[in-house]
Length: 334
Image 1 (spheres, rainbow, N blue to C red):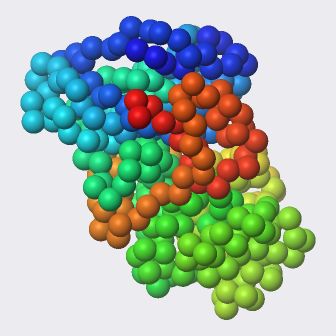
Image 2: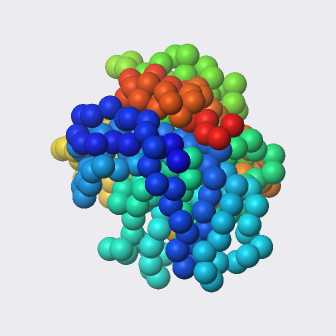
């Protein structure tokens, strides 16, 4: 089969012929029709990730058709159109992942290939209203957004929620789900264009975090502080989130692209009775609930740009630039 292979740190992805995997006991073979990129792929390429092993095939997100089943896997899965849950081995504790938890695309070979073999328990029916490209945009970002927004922060219809850094895949998926259930959604971004596009998708409004008094001005425009804040940046700007959180508010973050949270005033946390929550990926139940929500509300993930598999390295550079609005998708076996 054809696959994009990463030979080492800071090396470009190379399209080459590699052996087609065979499904082992309890596994299925998925002929991939589309795969989506995540920042995780770029971090691995740059060597900024634990447990690096080369050569490797990156890619955590994928959708396709099952073409073979291994011993013990349900025979009725054959020929089914599916989406893959990339989080494997969560464990028995729904509160936190086990030490055995892994993400598809390292250490296991990932979805930037024509075929991938995965345990059948991590296969879910592709939502019928989505194309393969749209479905591939869903898994890692979708389950991360769902767990952060609903399982951890407990967002409810009618609550006011702030989603920071809109334009990234997880933030946009959180936006779409929050709008769908009837929450009042506001956003931040460094780009006015991205804020305007988020408003077109159902957000009430937004603010540029590059503006000096954005926090104060946004609370005034929104008519009050925020019950839930969903963040992926952390860093020095995290203290602004304490200011815009309502008393009893919940702040959940699933990333730290701006670095460590420093000099947090403790009184702002305890006097306002704030909950500060960490979140990453999600359980199998989170994934199933996320897919069900997308089906129930017929939500369509935002696809930024599509590339053929042969242009995978070019797609990686677009991800690295951070200019995308939505998910970058590779078309495979189309």
